[in-house]
Image 1 (cartoon, one colour):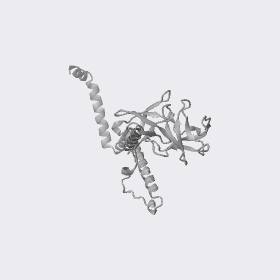
Image 2 (cartoon, rainbow, N blue to C red):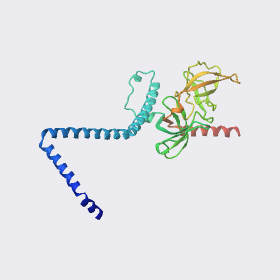
Image 3 (spheres, helix red, strand yellow):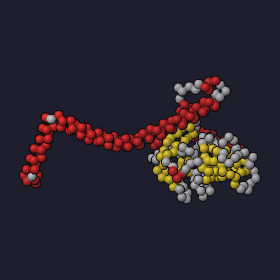
Image 4 (cartoon, rainbow, N blue to C red):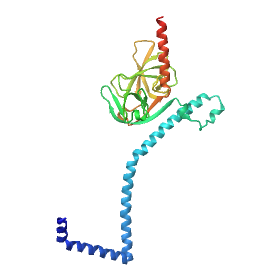
Length: 290
């Protein structure tokens, strides 16, 4: 406090000078219309720039929330598409198919649920894996399928409360049941550990018709993916030892080097189906030893 008083006493003449200047300027502006208008213009200009910068900062930090809302909307739309496809398939021979009723709770009859997530780590060397920013708290569980806007990414391997690790196509341990779009014959897709843009479709029946440029999609013969999700494009035939099957070279549609946002999919009645099939296998095994 003593230092403050000493400073004021030492600089009292400057304080008095600036006070008088401020009062003088205030009086001039207050009593002269011209100066008052100029001051108002400057004040508005400064205030406008301050508000503009403030709004820009606020908008920037609001982008994350906006993006999350958009991502959730995309997931809801994907659910809605699945519902509509199911309704059209069930009523394809009926005129009612032209008037699908939107009041039905499509989420309760859709076979799959969808969750959006963001990639926070993407390893593209050796045994590749991908880390997502959502986990069990967001409803993610192991074995959920993962795909991007262009094609299949992989399958959830491990889950914590806030993160999940995905086993991608670009991992030698990943295998996916796929088929050529428009056919019902399926094979097993896997990666040979070489090119991150290519994979191979093995065990495809040799009489399956295909052309270079055909689209390869998920077969639906798994718990992780519904039928018809794009995987890649046929680029040619590989040498095959077994004449009963073909192996195809596939160009993957997902650009793993630029992966940012993904969608996870889960079959709602998966546990029920797994338990039923497990029980059936148990009955078959017991009958063999009787």
